[in-house]
Length: 290
Ligand SMILES: NC(=O)c1ccc[n+]([C@@H]2O[C@H](COP(=O)([O-])OP(=O)(O)OC[C@H]3O[C@@H](n4cnc5c(N)ncnc54)[C@H](O)[C@@H]3O)[C@@H](O)[C@H]2O)c1
Image (tube, rainbow, N blue to C red; front, side):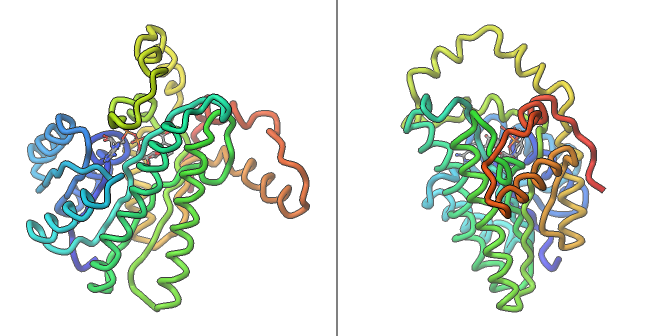
C-alpha cells in the first residue's frame, strides 16, 4: 500500500472502531467519518492515547455533500488515502407489512446511498493513484433473506452486488485498486441500538414506544451472548486486504444456508427457511473462518 492512510466511515463504534485500532496499530493514519459526534471525539482521543495518528470528521454518509466535504478535508489534511472502509450502517427490524416508508428510506439512505456516495467520492482518488483498496461492509444478510429484516437485507444485497460489479470493472481496467466485501454474521456492536443515530427526517412515532421498552437491554444482551467480537472481524479484514481476498466471512455457520439457497436457485425450487435459518442469526454460532 503506497498511502498508509485508512478512511473508516462509521468508525466511532463497533466494527469501525476496531478497524481504526487495527489499521492504526499497523502504522496507518486514521480518518474517521461519523454522525455521532461525542463517540467520534472519544474515539479520536482513545486512538491518540495509543499513539495512533487519528483525525475525526462529522459525516452523514446519506448526504453526497457531506461525503464530498469529508473527502476534500482528508485530501487537504492528510493526503490521498490507501484504505477506504465503507462501514457506516444502521439496522431496524420488523415484518415488511409493518415497516414504515421512513424505515426503508433511512436504512437505504445510510447503508446503500452511503456506499454509493463513498464510491463516487473516493474511487477517483484511488484510481488516480492506481493503488489502494475499498472494503464494502455488506453482511451475511447480503446473501440470505432473513424474515423481519426486509430493508436491511435489501441494502446489504445491493452493497454486495455493487462491490462485485466494481471488482469486475477494475479487473477489466487492469487497475491495481482492490475491492473486498465484508459479510459478517452477528457481531457485538451498537447496531441493535442504531436508532440513536436516526436523523430527524427519518423518525417514526413507533420509535418512542421502542425507546421506552425496559426489557430491550435484556434482549440485546441475550442476542449478543455468543456473538463475535468486532476486534476479530477487524483482524479478518486486515488479513483479507493484505491477501487481496474479495469475500470476507466471519461465520462458517452460515455457509450451509448459502449453499442450500444457491442450490434452490439453480433448480428453481421455492425458497425455504430450512429449519434453523433464524436460530443461526440469533444464537450467533461463530466459528472463525480459516
Ligand atoms: N453488528 C453486526 O452483527 C453486523 C453484522 C453484519 C454487518 N454489520 C455491518 O457492520 C457495519 C458497522 O456496524 P456495527 O455493527 O459496528 O454497528 P455500530 O452501531 O456499532 O456502528 C455503526 C457506526 O455507524 C455510524 N453511523 C450511523 N449512521 C451514520 C450516518 N448516517 N453517517 C455516518 N455514520 C453513521 C454510527 O454512529 C456508528 O459509529 C454496518 O454497515 C452494519 O450493517 C454489522
